[in-house]
Image (cartoon, rainbow, N blue to C red; front, side):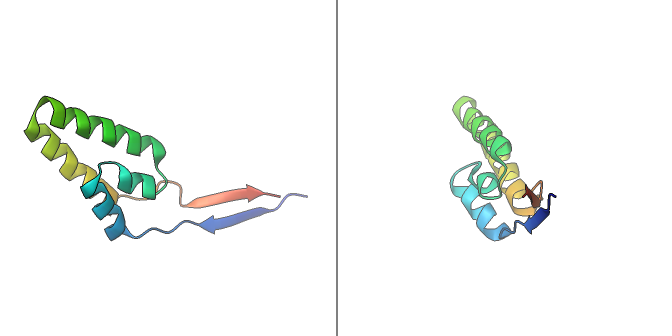
Amino acid sequence: MTTDLIRERRFNPIIAGVLSFFFPGLGQLYKGQLFRAILWFCFVGAGYWFFVFPGIVLHFFCVLGATFGSAGQDRLRLSR
C-alpha cells in the first residue's frame, strides 16, 4: 500500500524579491524554480553584457517575477 504525503512549500515573497534584486535568478532558486533561475540569470546577464538598458528592464521583471510569481508546484508528493 502506498501513501502520499503532501507537504506545502512556503516562501517569503519579500525575501525572494530582495534575493533577485541583488543576484538575478536567486529569488527563483529560493522558491525552488531551478530552470527559471538559470534562465533569468542568463538573460539578465546577457542584457547587461550587450546593452545596459535591456539588462535593467530584464532585471526589473526578474525581481517582479520572484516577488509576485507563484512557486510553481507548491506541493511535494512523497510515496511510501
